[in-house]
Image 1: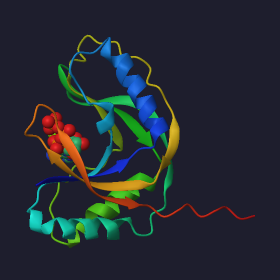
Image 2 (image 1 turned 45 degrees about the vertical axis):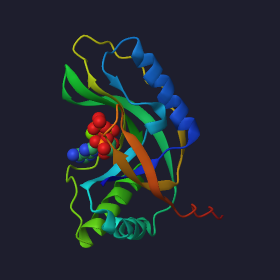
Image 3 (image 1 turned 90 degrees about the vertical axis):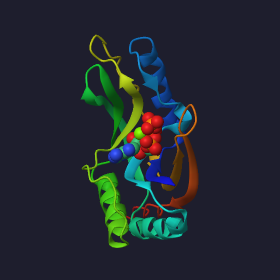
Length: 181
Ligand code: ATP
Ligand code: MG
């Protein structure tokens, strides 16, 4: 089955991303990601035999060990690919917390023998695919902050008219240590 590992976002950030997506609808043509599928991919595994799913989950759990839930904020819009057929995204700022989590999750999966896409991690939420940015004047993105506390192993099914992501396991990051004076 097709697997990927992603950080999920709190409701207030999902709401802001939905508002940005709605604002883009009037200016950019392309394929919009439905708001209930917004996520931050940490590792893309692709096809993995069903018999190894439990090993993937335990590797991701180990990779998350020692990582606390983190403050995150939405940032600027950015894109990958060609201007007429781009992937359009909004960045996620956490300082080094999310890159460090992605690094450790990937490393833990690698140690267990899983291979994955090796593109360097750039924290973002994809809002559109095949976006025509050649003429578009992009709106200002809506910004919001919140706490990221969940890492999820998703199964992705691309056989239907739109991708269907099914959470196989949700891993809760440790609570942030209370600050003591
Ligand atoms: P579709 O491919 O139909 O547009 P999708 O990209 O949402 O749908 P998947 O291709 O299963 O669904 O991807 C799941 C997640 O993994 C998405 O966040 C996607 O951007 C990311 N992803 C997919 N392929 C790769 C890849 N080769 N490298 C890195 N991330 C990837
Ligand atoms: Mg894809």
